[in-house]
Length: 263
Image (cartoon, rainbow, N blue to C red):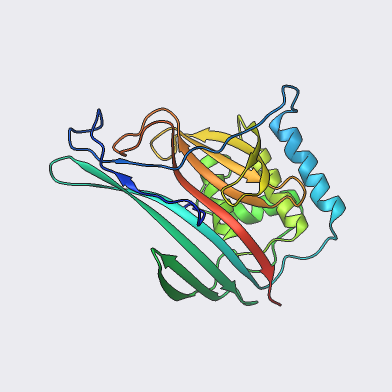
C-alpha cells in the first residue's frame, strides 16, 4: 500500500483494544480522524469547480515549461497489517518523511526518515522525467504511457498523481493538466473546503474505487489558487477486510509540503 502523510503534531499509537474484530485477540489501530469538510448547499458540480481552478491556475501565473530539477518535500502515513499463523492480525502505523532531490537528467536522491532514523538512497532515472506536457490531452497521454494503471479509475489516478508529485516539480500548466485528469474521474464529488494535515486551506474532491479489493474513497486536496495538489487520502468506507480498523478509516495519506526549483 502506498504511504500517506502525517504532520509532526499528530501522535499515532497502536491501541491494543479487543472487541468485535476478525478474532478475539485483534489489535485495533488508532487511525487519524477524517478531515472535516465545509460545503455550501449551492456548490457547483465537482468537475465544474476543478475547471474553474484550472483556469485560475493558468490565468494568474506565467506559463513555463516543466522544471528540469527540483527539491520535493512530502510526508506519508501508512497502515500495515500483519497476520500470524493463527489468523490474528496486528496493524502498525508507519509515518515517514521524504526529501527528494531531482537533477536535470531525471536522476536524484531520496532521504527517507522513519521513526527518527534517516537513510539517503540514490534514485535512478525516472520514467516520469523529461518535459511534462502542459496541454491537457497531451498530458493525459504522457502520464498514461508512463503509468501501469488506469487513469479512469480513482485508485489508478491517485497512484499516478502520487508518482508524479513525488518526483517532479510542476509548473502551472502541468498542475492544471493534472487537475483535468482528476476532473474526468467517474462519479467525482466535491466534499467541500478543508484544512489539510499541514494546516493549509484546500478544496476536497473524492471518487470511490474497489480496485484494491476493498471499497476505498480517494480524496484529492487541491489549493484553489495555485492548483497544487496538497495531498491525497484513502479512506475505507464499507468494510475493513482483515485490516484492524474501525470503519470509516483513513488508512493512507500523503501530504505534499513543498516543491521548489533547483536549476
